[in-house]
Image 1 (cartoon, rainbow, N blue to C red):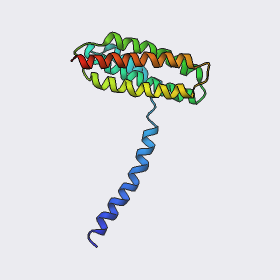
Image 2: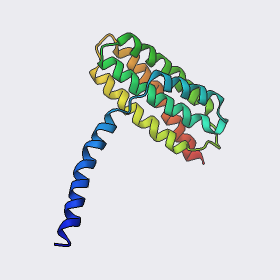
Image 3: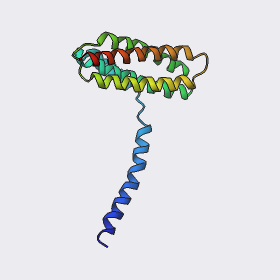
Image 4: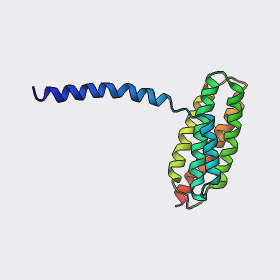
Length: 152
């Protein structure tokens, strides 16, 4: 009887933890305000922290763009894709040999490129060129960050 009670408690707790995780993972799409705040923080950050912050910015902008595209707001999604291209250029310019969390930035850019590739597969023919250009920019930034990691 003593072993049945802790097992039952553990079972009840584990059943309750599952739905909480499932709900929280789908709600991680950032707002435009959080993106603006991160962009301001990245532009004012120390040079060795900028690469990772810009990678976070690209990732958040991509998630918001995908959400807007699936919601049918193609105009806003397109505007975000153009912003992503500009930020990806900033990643190239901010790369330095002494970057903090450079490997984390490279991994984040890889996941972002994967998400953009998913967006490319579901986009319409008229939207594909912009998504392809954005994917190419993010992939180039990821490759540049990876090359910096290997130079260390």
